[in-house]
Length: 187
Image (cartoon, rainbow, N blue to C red):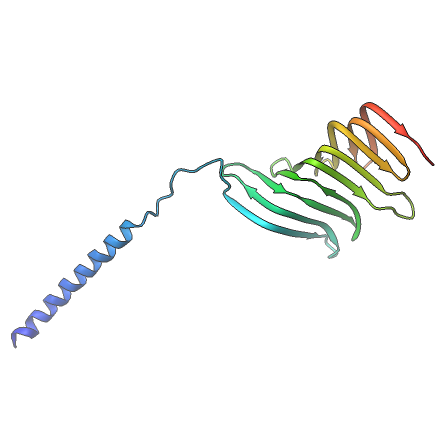
């Protein structure tokens, strides 16, 4: 056997060892370990969000749009910029909520809207249009209620209501006005 034939397996083993060492060095230089978590920076951000929810019959139930949505690390709340939420009853539009900012509390299943909040219901054959404007609005999706402790103005057809704070129960249709109530009734 010639000398080259005897050295080939030895050279091959040496080459493989060098290749393994080199690959190990390359992969160890990458910093795969996560750095310190910055709790003030979003864990994720979604721009131009559109979401639709349908009922068991396939009819629209909710429609949501937002310019941006994000969540902070270790925080169960979801934040929204310029949210617009449409709620449907049996596939027919019921009301719309818009605001400059919003926050959804996943654990409590509640939402808080702030800055230029508008709650709107279009006129139907049975009732005139309603437009409620306020600076903040708290919505409890489990209790099916809406409330706030801030000033609000509500236009109901040609009538107008002004109040500081309210509690609205959707199931009973009951509206409790908390203070400084002024109503201008125009039939």
